[in-house]
Image (cartoon, rainbow, N blue to C red):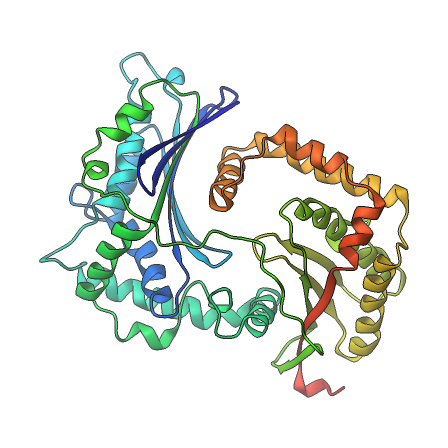
Length: 428
């Protein structure tokens, strides 16, 4: 595998990942912009509107037809919240030219051009997105936002984040807010799209068995040519000094739920980028695997949780503990969870636990190279934080971690927010 990057214009980069182990090429375009309350809903809508068509492919059906004509290529799009940024993501996967008949050797070029067209040249009427499309996507977005509570586990994590980051970018819901939708129409949404394309960070990734023409294909694309260089409007994730909290923030929310959802948001007060690797192993031992303290002690031995794990958000240096519990077990479960955190501070974990966590993490690192989308996600994550670490270097950093490093992290961890979603009908 060989990774290269080229800055086409300021704020616009081409990334190529040469790898001959796949039968397909994957092209991805990411638009990264700051998460802001006044634009979060519009950006979410734009990610949906752009998939509706272009002047050459004015409907979703036409896009699908053209994908089918490209030997069954697939188009997809999505929306992420990454640190304090909102990322609009667009993908086309197409069979590699070497697996096609000799007369069809331009599928990669065509796929790149189609994806750039979808992102950079949307279907408009009189300087406005088509009203029919906008109203349909507003309704879809309204339903998506209203359905937010349907998945109680995801909702509980989102709510814990909101409580930890009130009136801050990371606390915003990536799909936006219903009250914003009424103010949006085709014209003001198109105006916002033009501003977005003039200011956002643009990253184009091409992964697969590639040739030397990729850079030329992209540079000569008319939609790329019309873009201007920019000082991109996004937040570079950096180590932030965590504000000292005198006491834990406890939030109890009541809803009709079959199972209580207990989320504990932890701050990791580190001041060096390198310490994130130690934090990764700390989280793995605490709750990141089936051998973790959370899983073994809270779920398996004490039977206090149906689900008990934790996840590490590197961009914000937070760890979130997630538990699904019987509502009456709240106090017992919380006490036992806090004991796991304290045991980590005291170094109450074995060399075997450390080695198992390191082996599991390294095994996960090795799988990054097994899928084109995980390759792209890995290099995009590095692009955002402006660091470059190869997979080999990543594995070496994990292998070098010792018990003292993990204990050091354990003593940097502090409970910020305890969020409990419970059913009011069941009492304490």
